[in-house]
Amino acid sequence: MPLAGRETHPNAPKGSSPVPITRSASQFSLVKGSHRYLVRCAAGSEETAIAQLMTWADTEDLDFDWFDAAVLARQIAQRQFERAVGRPND
Image 1 (cartoon, rainbow, N blue to C red):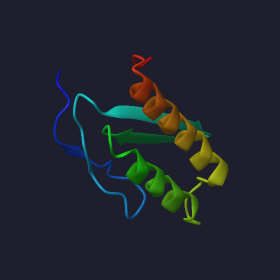
Image 2: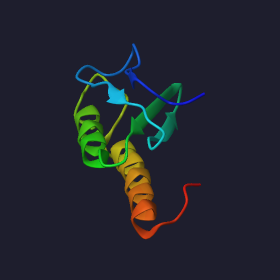
Image 3: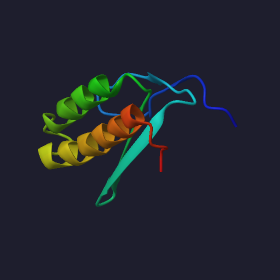
Image 4: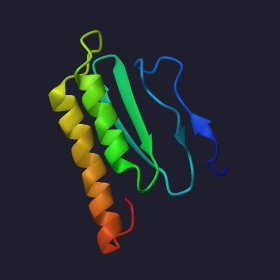
């Protein structure tokens, strides 16, 4: 099934924006206790995704802290690097 459209989870943190889902979109996840944080971003929108992680980390009513943001941001940066040097996605 092709990836298409825009998606925001109904329980996404306040201020989250729908992101376009395309074939070049990447998905990153973090499981923390009973919570699963899922981030999808299209190639070229990594900075926006990382900014959203920072917003989540700064939100007191979320069980998502700066360490969690750093873990996901590292995953995003690694994928961006792999694209830049021409490595295939894992």
